[in-house]
Image (cartoon, rainbow, N blue to C red; front, side):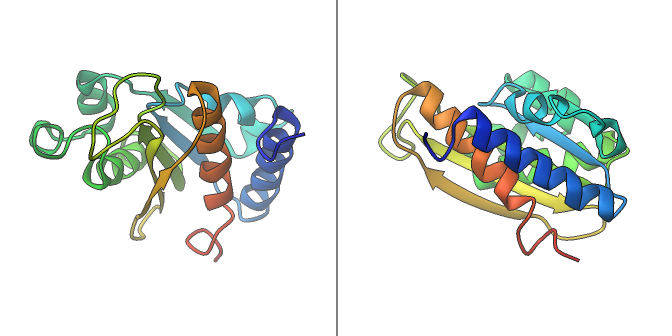
Length: 167
């Protein structure tokens, strides 16, 4: 059993739900490279409507702009896989939803699409509480497309249990 198999991801999503429910918080996801996988792990849990508001899979530049308010200049200057973009995604998710906490992911899952400065496996994840400051981390995951995406889901969920969310 790997550290990011279905059972591990399911248990982690349940743990996130316990914390959010206890704090009376609602979650929103803004996903690019995972295509809604974080929201799927959450909605697999009975009763998640108590703590899950919505999920947006915004893959294209146009969707990132329309659904999450990512500025065209940000995408042009920094690209979709960047700190700047994930910060705008996570902030935009809170603007367009009724959630109090958001997570956003954008990355290059492969097998193609990598560049020397952003190789396959490069993923930015952002977290934010309503009224708070966002946090963004870059990861360089190894493995095939599925492995990169699974590791992204794992780190996104783990971040919801981290210091930014603990209050």
